[in-house]
Length: 100
Length: 539
Image 1 (cartoon, one colour):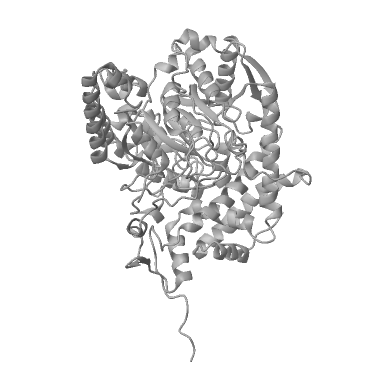
Image 2 (spheres, rainbow over the protein chains, first blue to last red):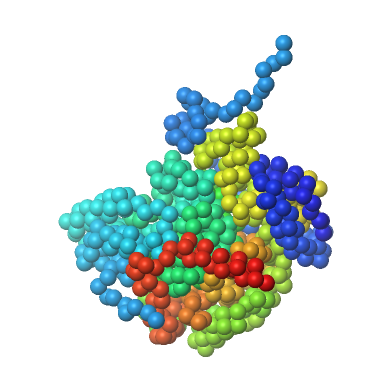
């Protein structure tokens, strides 16, 4: 099965938005490769005609009345925010100043 | 090797006995709560089963319970009958169950300082049932682990041997129940996180059918696998707690609208009746569950237990679950994949700890890189990889197909047997540090439990004796929604082994918990790790 390079690990860490140290990347290359090697056993099984299972219990669509009910208030929702401004979560600017 | 059983100490009672004593007025909820809090405050430094002890909240709930008992007594016998089942009975919550106004860290630094803004569904259920929440128990970070060593707040010790792990991820609840810090505990089980710690601490633990208990307000790990379930010191207590927790809740769309029996009330009262309930029951013994790496003495205890069940009237038939060996690989694709999606929510913006590094992307990388521990990072990486472009079909889709094969194995088995009986864990409790250096060796801890999650089935672990002084667990696995039968089987097994010598034993290290010179689990564990490192360096 797949062999994992250092740049693969760095790419996946970026996708997962995980800041890793150089040392962590080095360790993960080996550890993830070892775990991926365990996955290789699955290739033995012919599964072309087998449907995937995402959900084990059979629950039919459940409908409810379309009613307005109370939900978590703004103060409760914001109570754990690292930074806030009045009733908003505060984040760094994501758009640069427009060029003239 | 064990302390004499005290008959006057209320913490030694089972939960159903506490409920009876409270109702009879032989004990007040305040006394019972104070007795537990006193034990925790005196002993938990040496065990670290609790991440937060809620003295104030527990005393308040107990005081209210006593007022309700007083009011009901004035109203006469009908008044007492109308009281909820767990009124005044203490319970331990795993630190991923939200409780309004209380911390919830899920064992992670990234949730340090987080205070729940609302109650989980089961928190509401427990309050309605009158339970007294003593506090919150330690766990592997985000429930990822089988030893509780991956908690950001240090490992938990096993009261049977404080140099060993209690299992995980619900190790804090299991250890607390085993050490009489609480009669009942709440856990969650994604691949074995209730049953394996139950086995390793000599307690009873049930993973219900997927959909049996609403997960609204529970910190999510792998959403197609996670279930909430009870710990107790006997089957009746676990059954009583499940009746309180279970049932449809519209806030969890996977919670099923299926009637919930009064499980405990249905159980046989006497041991004779319990033993008799085994007659005519067909139990399947899955050949593949005696996995490679199983300790011979654990296998011996399990086979002895199965023999006793057979001698007492159950019909034992060997069955095949041919895809069992593929369970581990399948699970370690599906669970990390789902986890990588669920844990995307920890962004350092809405709640939880935050680190700043220039811009939004820098903030994410710093918050998540610094907030998550090693095992959680490993799982996020595995899951992200398995879901990423080019690998989805080879890993995630393939695993979902094999999941179908695993489920079909169980479906086929239940055509010819009423339930399965198997080991819970291939080994007894292992020493701190023993499986930390090789993630795959830790993952093998759950080889006998995780296929049950893959198929969404209920599984019950009950103690079945000791191996070198450490508890061994016996697992009953049922068809979907058949928890009732598992409780009956567990109760029957208790009945036919009621006079076994090991039943009279308490965890051997309880006296050490009372000794102020006993090192904390973190101190033991770092000493153990230092010894391992120097041994490795010497090689």
